[in-house]
Length: 275
Image 1 (cartoon, rainbow, N blue to C red):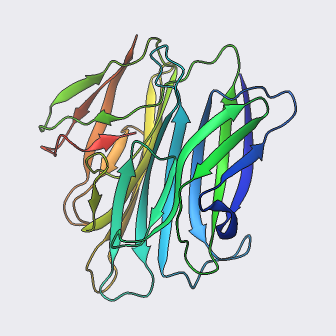
Image 2: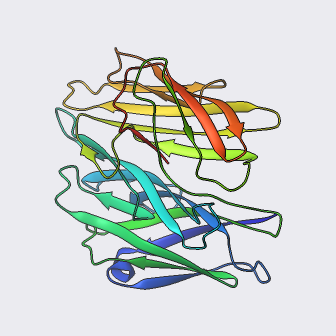
């Protein structure tokens, strides 16, 4: 297995309607997958952004579906928080067609939208649709690339169980995973909600069988600001409908020959999605 991490700044002046090459280390080969951590900012490195009107943070996944086909899936989820708003203005969203997406809180303006990522020998190409970034802003990313003859990758989405105590399975892989990396904003696929900002990120391993997750919450229309954060060493996904209701859990029960099973603690909307 080979991995490399690239810190890449996508400038607002270069992204709109363009494809941007990211060089990888010599002899890395053709990547099998990429995980993207991204934030929209206008600040210098190691400094806080204190002026953009809408703060966007998200995570993206690029890779084949893991069913033996070679086409790449592009998925991401992200949150938006309006700066200096009273009461608070927030949004959360996900996509199964973009690797990176950021918008304003209302969803009426697209700042960055990466519609496709393609892999080549020692390189990756990020294609952006036409967009209008925030003034003086740019997109900061941490790109984690994976390759190797001993590595098989599957990237897709999964609807969470919809009943309290209910379980379901993801069975779309043609291999048994050793590890699962996941993220969710607890929304239906390609849906945008403005009641709160939620994002859950975590991981699970097969041997030894373990799972852990982190969760961040900002309640919309709140005065004063109402924030929540938590972590778990036994649950894949924690989430809440407000900081006074929950937490609810999505727990991975087992990692199977072609995917995994999970159980919900909440009678949640079954359209809630896991990347």
